[in-house]
Length: 121
Length: 350
View (cartoon, rainbow over the protein chains, first blue to last red):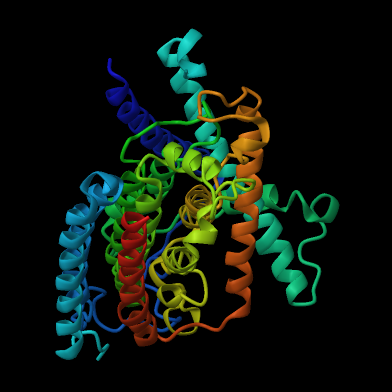
């Protein structure tokens, strides 16, 4: 097996360990903890009063613009990192190209800013 | 070169790595909770903190685990049970996947990814998924609001963190964390190489942005709007009780430790000491004892950084939600982009 695959296999082992540790502790706790649920305990907690309506009721979600902006900027990171890691190989040409790229991104941010999208309404 | 690869079979290596990973996740978490959350916070508030369990309350952690184990594991009737029960484990998995990239010595590493920085930033955002599904599956309005706030905050501060890391990658010329450590310890500042070149000096703005983003990613005060107890009870954790809550709690402080470890790799020189002191020139020259000293050095740096995180946490009042978003988008991101551009220009010019 190549080093490369082994490294990623280690990631799998670590994920499995996390699940195993969590599962083991929860399993141990299951042996000692009491379990006598009643309808009052299982009601959604709303500061002690009866819950109003359903938990999945309509509410205004203000974050979708931020989520969209995030996707744009995060994809940008995919392009910036390979350049950053080998910046000396690309020299001045790469630098100018990437500065133009960064300015375009900043332009997008300023546009969103001017449109008032960054204001939390 | 790899000490572990020479004489131990693959399953043995993996077992060693997994055990090392368990220590690397749980030891910082326990230390942070006892030292900072129990004791330092108490002293800052003119009280003693836990004193009964063991000398100076040092066994308090065991007592806490015992207590939480005996608590009933409730899930609201309206909740989406399978996902509700899964959410804390997702957050814990994120922490374990994050520790995989951190090098603790010349041979004491878990994985040696060539794209280590990128991998770290990618898996760090898995915890957002855990928090979102916890908030959603609880079928509780507080939880949903808390989960959405957490998601909005974590993605907003993910970007400054990514861009601050970019400056380090530009300076080191590599995304491999081991290479970044070596680059810092063999570097020089204006021809002076006695201290190496820990990037906290040359990337100070990047370091500041990174630490602020870490504070926000960990949802520690002043960035704890998602669990604002005065309005949302406990945010996405409202409906969790017993051990599932404790897993969230452990994961939170384990992640604090892991982020501090990553910050010390990126900005404080990681496990290394300036190579010049012992006449080393590359990672292959480094003596074997650094595999033992490295983890100790890393642990010390981790404690210093988490001390700062906790100090800020105990000292500052909470940001309002709109201030929090504005701070990330209108100040940190443009600043981080400017930092990247300036670093790149200087790197190419010199």
